[in-house]
Image (cartoon, rainbow, N blue to C red; front, side, top):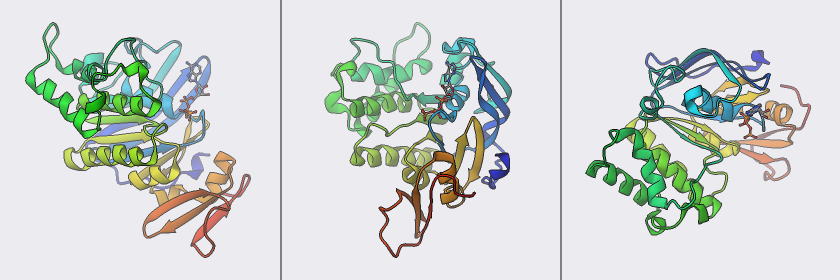
Length: 295
Ligand SMILES: Nc1ncnc2c1ncn2[C@@H]1O[C@H](COP(=O)(O)OP(=O)(O)OP(=O)(O)O)[C@@H](O)[C@H]1O
């Protein structure tokens, strides 16, 4: 499978993410296998791959959640070279790591009784001195996030009572309030309508372009993943099997084989669109493949 990899983007001198031979074993199974990945500061890398490929586990390893201090380590072993924003999450205190790296989880845990504004404010925790109180700057950071994500009207609502899509935006808000250098997004738009998908991803893109944050986003929607990520990493069976530009990674034969899906891949003016086979209009420049198609 490793031979399926295509060329990645230019190697950064000053990588935001740098891992080599990264391997995660959980419950006796290798769920991330020998992953080597260097991501430059200010890049957006979309991580794609079928269910169970290892995307979430990779993001959790980058976030430092698979260490005893991370709290979800149960039986996880993380080996290999790992550096995120210049620190090894396995050897860095959680609070320090959280000032550099924020994860928007796929399955957020929402404390009962907490309001939207309070949940977003939790993103400031790594920046507030121990036993200290939030500064005016912390409060302004939270207010800005609520504004940018259209959450002001929800600010006093109980977070646990929100719709799935509303909660997803609030959880992104908490990650943005952290003001991280590296933002890890795990299926950030899975519960969002098409308008909020664009709003949320455009906001993240504007933070990437304007403030130089690095974005690593696990996404199932291959078209959105290709639109926002100038670079795509495809995982399957715990390994990286393709790494490069969307045009290269989204090969219809590879998608057919890896996902067991019948798709058409359209290329229009620099945009790559992946559709279930049969939906593309005739006459478009496209490639088609089904399960079992060649690479
Ligand atoms: N705590 C655990 N113990 C044992 N195996 C685990 C544990 N957590 C995850 N796994 C397994 O690791 C593999 C990778 O899971 P992971 O959640 O990283 O995949 P994914 O690519 O994010 O999938 P999805 O697209 O469905 O979210 C799966 O086979 C999963 O069952």
